[in-house]
Image 1: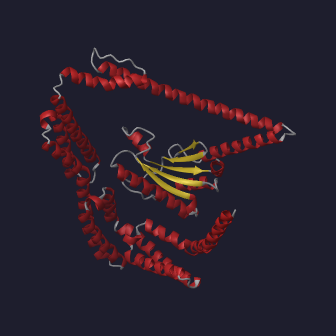
Image 2: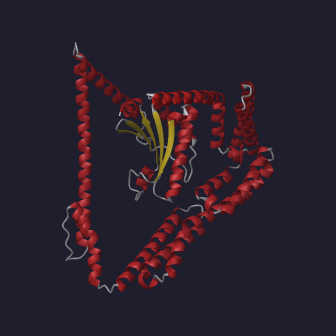
Image 3: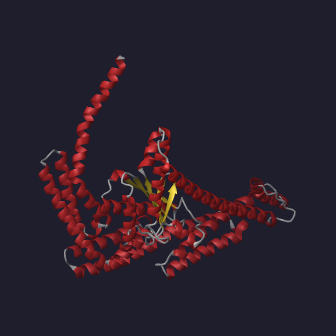
Length: 491
């Protein structure tokens, strides 16, 4: 008993100590909230780069305001300081508008260099370009348009050079590294055809970059194929060398090749026979897989039909319950549950009707609602939301308003082109851009909304087709309604 009292006392003491800190944080949020939102908006528009002097001043005054607040200075003094911050941020916004027009070509070249990973893969070229660009924006901010244009032209050329260096390093270096490794391992003795194929693809990728560095899609594909074929040649060389060292016969090799097909066939219930070679059992396995996929599609159609029938029956039950009187407590509770379900289904249909087929699709994931925005697209390697998509995001805002107590997760997804790390980072940037847009235009508290990027890890279609890749490049707005949160809390 004595120990319990001591523990309770310690808890109360800790709460007492924390209470002023919590109150202080709440006061800070109230005082700095509007300025923080404005600062985030300018950062999102690259204000530190396009309006460096005004942004620097804004940052300095913000730091002073923060320091004064932490020292407990008069709040009016802090607010005056924050007003100075907002004045400089307004100057930033005006300068950004001018820069986006006057330096549009250079900004485009810079964005392309960023997409190619120039900061990582062409560090020196990138730093030279960025330095010259900062000179241009500094001159523009001071009203010296002629000097700004001159330096912007130099920066554009430097950014293009950095982009090309990055593409070569990012795409071609891995392939050439593997080819050098293959040469050292004398792979040509055992896997000459595969190795030559890798060399041809790497050379083709290099030629494509030289001919048109601004359209690197085909070059990147060929570089990736070259990397694969070089790795494939190394593997074949190791396997063939192992066969030779083990003094294996052709019969041994064929028997080893049959094993994977036999194993797959056993797993899906297909009897495999190899007396006529590998092609026939392989075709049987493929046919079985296609049949299974077809059956699965049919099963999903049946499930959807049954769900519609269930919804119709639930509506009939709801209508009948409306005619019943003198309900018992249990019956009343059931009616309440069904009424809530009916309301939620109606809300789901209402939200779904807001979007056209090209704009997006509204889905259910258990209790959660997913707005899959097919119509929101971004430039290659970019995460900037173009004004033409504002009307679509307005529909998203209107949808979110129908779930005032919900939590929101913005998910970014990409196709499988490019590196996995870059795709994840790009999906995170795009999801965060949507998040910041919604915060800025709806005033959603930070605690209610979060963003996450899954890169290429969660495809919904095949990445082997153009249409499939287009579907995989998407933003999912996941709404976690209050009733779903309540259910999770009860569990």
